[in-house]
Amino acid sequence: MKMTLLALALWAIAGAGAQAAVAATHSITMHQDPNCGCCSGWAQHMRDNGFEVKVVLTDDMYRVKQQRGVPMALASCHTARVDATGQIVEGHVPANAVRKMLLAPEVKGVAAPGMPVNSPGMGPMDGNLITVDFDGRPFSRD
Image 1 (cartoon, rainbow, N blue to C red):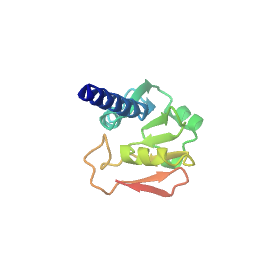
Image 2: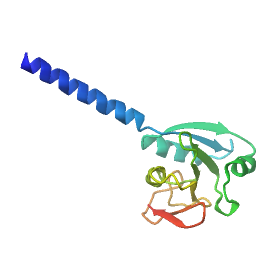
Image 3: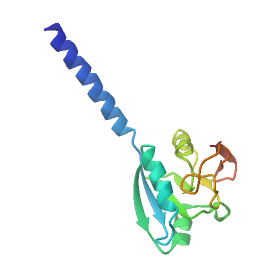
């Protein structure tokens, strides 16, 4: 009897942990030009790191960036929005930097300007990628 109660308690705890993990999953909507190939590499990096990524193809990335308030000096090839918070991820920002942004709701967005070769989807990360917030201040180093 005690073993059965213990087994049920452990099962309930494990179930609660799994529910918390699912609740911690963040969905992101990424807009990209249909002719850009590197964006799918970034989307896969984010999926590999527990994010759900919805891809929207568009021929008008300039308009997407304007609508989301991306500073043009920080622009890259794709623009993503965290669905739950509205925060913006511009370009090949690593998942670690996105998680850091999610802990700072005052940060409107983070960017990896241009298309850095040491960023997810572009090439191997080397620990020297600097991402910036939308005010142009250094945000993370990955």
